Length: 305
Ligand SMILES: Nc1ncnc2c1ncn2[C@@H]1O[C@H](COP(=O)(O)OP(=O)(O)OP(=O)(O)O)[C@@H](O)[C@H]1O
Image (tube, rainbow, N blue to C red; front, top):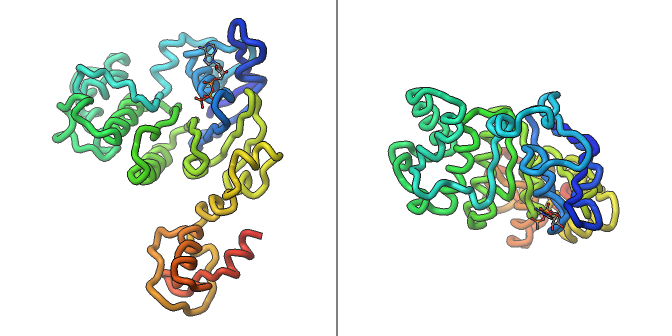
């Protein structure tokens, strides 16, 4: 569990606080996405958690323990940190990069080697193919996977991610998001993730926290946030297409009706947004579901109301 209590950071010489009195809890084994405009304090908030930035006021509790009372270097060994630029050591192999924290934790070589192979497998990189490569011999997506593997290597209960998929092309991005999310859920990690991408926040966060000028303006599960933005600022930030974004959170079967519709069925992983796109493409008010029955336009409108 991560708990921020009245967390505040005022940079020297700044007129206002970059992070202003934020109180927020991320329950154990869940994820929270931090979103907000550029300069709203997302990265600073994340770095206050692992003490790369020291607060001006307030507290950070991790699993109930006050982070400010722990040695910052030790603290960081128990918090995974994934950033957009990944920050891999360029002259070290993938295996050596991933072994960084196990090395700092004093694991013996056999245990560290086994762990490196295990986490590389977890993120979908075959150790036989990738362990000996250097970072420049990887694609952007592969580098990002190595970044996640490195953050997981010491088995930290908490993970901080700052634009973790920012360098990945849009096509692979969604697949990588889904895979990493599934993995983190399965491992029961508590995750705080910063992104500027609204759709990504909705996919990655069990809850989403919206920041404006360092203040927390709304904290809610994605479907609730999209349905009921707290004010005009949040509504504007989520975008005029927020109703469509919300449809993307539900499986197509959520608007199932017991009726027949023409054409091929939707793929099993289709969302309501995909179903609507298919209706528009087919010029039809209903599309069949793989499990039988159909999604209808009326059922989608009922659900969105
Ligand atoms: N090391 C620093 N020294 C002084 N001011 C800083 C420092 N780091 C960040 N700031 C300021 O703190 C404020 C919040 O910055 P922060 O990087 O947390 O925002 P952000 O929401 O992550 O923005 P972005 O989406 O552009 O990355 C900004 O006004 C920024 O200029």
